[in-house]
Amino acid sequence: MFVSPAWAQGAGGSGLGGMEQLLPLVLIFVVFYFLLIRPQQKKAKVHREMLGNLRRGDRIVTNGGLMGTITRVPNETELIIEVADGVKVRVLRGMIAESLSKSEPAPAKSKKDQIEDEQDHDEAEDDYDEDENADIEEDKKD
Image: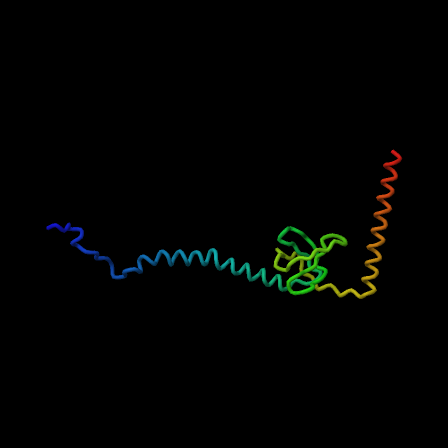
């Protein structure tokens, strides 16, 4: 009589055993998979495809917020983008956040076109220097 009636009745329980305890954990995993894991995998796949399809002439945005146009693709991991006239930046391909426009690859420049671009750039710098000198002379007169 030293044993209480609660202990004497035994564990009893249902025939499923541990399955009742695992069912909520399985349901939680299924919900996490469909609401979190699967959409993230789809987003990563789309981003990988976008990075693989980048071509010269595409407008892009980097993770740092720089916007520019791809001018050259030196290798598989790097891109050279032009963020302003004559300002080129080397960026890792993986650091591209999005592509703003899809365009056909720009035609390769011939040596003649490259020389003309350099001459135009040099002339623009000379014009800027002349404007700056004129501003300085006006300031001296005042």
